[in-house]
Amino acid sequence: AFSGIHMGAIVATLWILLLNGVVGFQILDDGTPISLGLLLASALAFFVGTGYIALDTGFSWTGHFDRSLTAPNRNIGLYVLYQLLPLVCLAGFFLLETVLVLRVLGEKKPMLYLVGSALLFAVGQVFQYVISTHLCNASDGKINGALFETLFTLLSVIMVWIFWSSITEDDWPEPPPEPTFP
Image 1: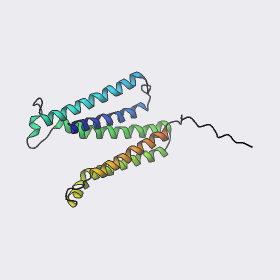
Image 2: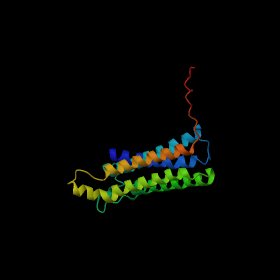
Image 3: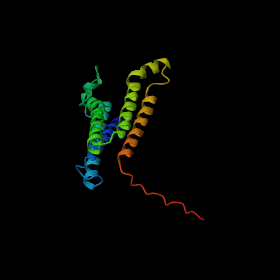
Image 4: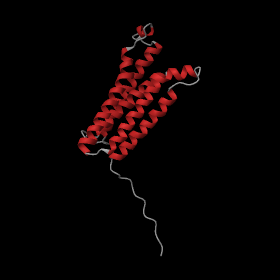
């Protein structure tokens, strides 16, 4: 059950990231009830849909995905939702933000943060899909690439936040200056 919830959360989170990339173009005013409602409703639909497909595959509730439980164990719908859609969302976010920063804002420095984030994420994926088996075999199953993949993904998310902070206006309240006495 936790795997289905995890898959749904990943898909919904990356869908929200893509929609946040679209929000930067001000097609709808951000923060309005309609924009928040569309964002949350669509993310909820992806979360529930992906979670349902994963759980139905694992627990065979309806029997619709039973053929994926026998060799060669392929569930195309789950593959598309869990592997391909997040990748498309990430690429879309990167492209949208690149256009926003370079064309609309005319800035170049924030691109260093965005490219850094993409590189950190890519390193994490290399740990997950390439290096993981070698780590697991070398440590007799005590460690795999998930630890490092999580670390590099966290660093990637931090870089996206730094990127976002560098392209938004600073509307934070300034603390009043300390009084000086003669």
